[in-house]
Length: 227
Image (cartoon, rainbow, N blue to C red; front, side, top):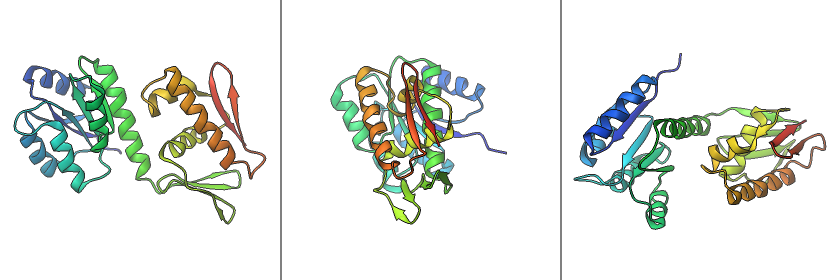
């Protein structure tokens, strides 16, 4: 039986922090609530959470500083920043120091939970040693490798690996374009859509050695992997 994920929530607005904590606990998350960055680092060491939700602007240590300290020990744990800041430079800084996602205030609990679930799922996949058989290919998600019979194909990028996983997990079914864009790009706008089309083209090239394998564009809906 899977244990409920433990979330470390660091938020200096006490009322907002308690609302988030209580809402998450009703969704079966275990929540460790901290009011500043120093408490958050101590709790991280003691509780070993599954995911960090860090407010950027906090006393003693801000969210970015906490993330930098955590990344010295753990390169993989998912980190989601909460912030009232909207400048592009702040978003870039958050990702550059190892953040996995960024949610601007005010936000809905539903959006927070969807983003948390996505990060937890990705983390679980990245730590899985499962090898998938796709036609005559062997796909190792954790290592992001693709092998055709005895031949190693050029390594997959992070997004190529996630996209192939979701296509294969929905084999012979249409993978909804909007859903996968929000899951992997956090946005389903035009530019994200064009970016996904490029990754689909790359995957088709890497899978072309087995003629049975096709990634079909179902216009207006999404893509379907068949083999």
